[in-house]
Image 1 (tube, rainbow, N blue to C red):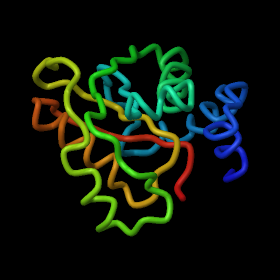
Image 2: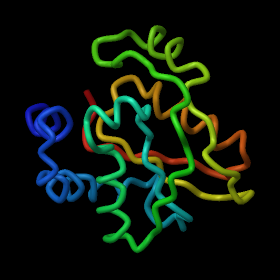
Image 3: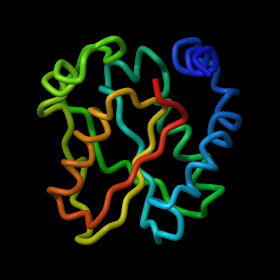
Image 4: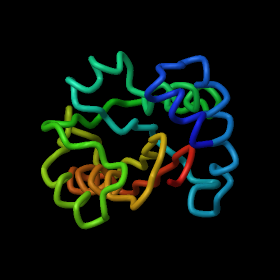
Length: 151
C-alpha cells in the first residue's frame, strides 16, 4: 500500500486513481458512515504551491472518483491558506501545531451539511481534524472522513 500511495502521490501516477478509490469503497460500509445521507464529498486541499509542484491534488482525484460511484457531488469547500511542512514522520503534537490556521473556507456552506472528507492517508488524524473543525465551525452538522490508508 505504501508503494502504491507513494507512486500515486510523489510519482505522479494518476493511473492509480481508480484502484485506490476502489480500495476506499469498503470503508463506506463502516457503521459511522453507512446509511448516512451525505450532501457532498470534500477533498483535503493542498497549498497552491504544493499543488503546482505536484501538478494535481491526490485527494481531489480520489473524491471525484468516489463521487461518481456514490452519486454524491464534490465540493471544494476548503482551501489551505498557508503552507505546512510535510506531515510524514511528525509527532501528533507537531502536526497539530503546524496545522493551526492552515485551513479556511473557500466559500460559505449551507447550515446543517453532512460532509465526507476525502484524503489519501491519515496517520494521527490531525489534518482531518483541522479540516473538520473549520467545516463544523462554519455550520456543518456532521463531518466524517475516509482515506485510502492509515500510515
